[in-house]
Length: 305
Image 1 (cartoon, rainbow, N blue to C red):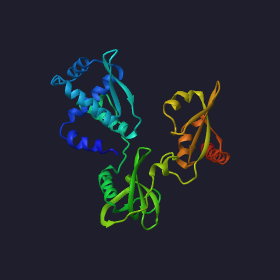
Image 2 (cartoon, helix red, strand yellow):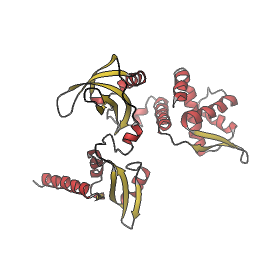
Image 3 (tube, rainbow, N blue to C red):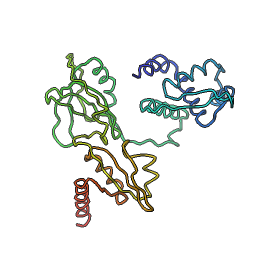
């Protein structure tokens, strides 16, 4: 599906990262400035005094930009400028551009740490990503130790299906051969990782379908409508950064607004709701509202001892 990205990165990015940086700069410039070819090249020259003007290269970049990042650049004959006409909604291409944007910024200055302060929170487990993808493509069995936050470490043997990102962590989605069911494993909790010289083909699973209603990685309850009422001070925040892709605003008045989420009502979702404190109230379903009430009462007891 994303073979074109993979081929481009292998053939171009590793040997000439400047071409990627140039395309990033073209996107950044045209987003806010529909421009002529001369203006585009003037802009690139200002950024890099060693830039060699070549219109054919820029036109090839336009094609690569669309293929890699989903930005369609068209020529407006009436205004005689190039402009971004369409942006394809694709999370993988968004992630790629996001990574390149950060890389570009971090390379700009040796003193970048004075201006950008990165989160020290470690995702962990990323060292295994390439090996897991190789095992998925070749149907190899994986063996590893799963370290628990709450109990004893256990040895696992599984057939990998996919990798999922959730809550700033990566998870291995796999068929556990001993337990004979689909499980997820946080890569940050894996050690003694090995690819076995053994193959196993689990049934075909649609991971997007399995996790489409998940908030995070948990999906152990059936998805339902969860209705939340927020103070209006949270409106701009939650419309710019929805809690879930299913979020729908179903009511708004002078002081509050109400949203509906179609999700698995899990512990992860409850923790997210609690982050809003008294700015958020669970209205439905009743059992989930009661769970929240119990949790809040327990907190009250802790703080009033």
